[in-house]
Amino acid sequence: MKSAPHPEVTQLLLAWSEGKESALEKLIPLVHKELHGLAHRYMWKEREGHMFQTTALVNEAYLRLVDSSQVRWQNRAHFFAVSAQLMRRILVDFARSSNYLKRGGDAQQVSLDEAMVVCKHRDADLVALDDALSALAAVDPRKSQVVELKFFGGLSVEETAEVLKVSPDTVLRDWKLAKVWLLREMGRKEKRESE
Image (cartoon, rainbow, N blue to C red; front, side, top):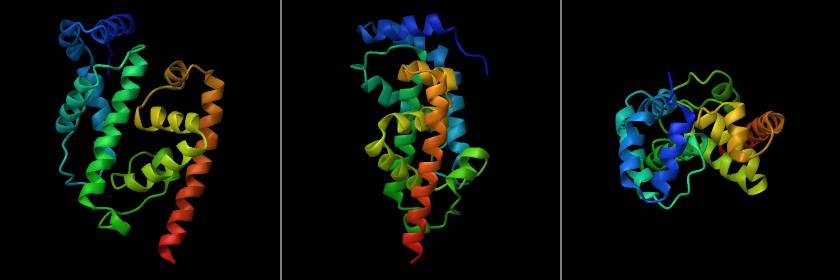
């Protein structure tokens, strides 16, 4: 998937932040393919028959992005990080409201390790992962952001480092530690629920 040049997207984001509505009109066609790809990665992990379709997820994200006009966009990576967070929030909110994963529901649970390493399971327990990620954020917000940007946002190590204003080595260290922490947390939750 070929992305729009970084400077052009960044310039349009900055113009949009300054209140220039015409910048948003020019920005949407430039980022649409990447947003659609991001939504597709999210939907690919969902169970079959999920009520949200990729296009609906992109549309819902657009609506929320337009409402977030007070955001001071830093650059393209920041925009996609926020977009990823919005898409994650939309799907988690939907899952919680539908209760389709409540106490296991009809979804097959997979471990975070399987989801993060393989990323091919449609029935990953998004709600449990979100709970564990929220718990991690309370302990170490940066590690939580690294997981969100890399796993959910699909950002590279370099892009994640750029958004968080840290080195790529720090991102890699945080990524490894966060995966271990989340696996342990999800294992504890699973054990408590099975008792």
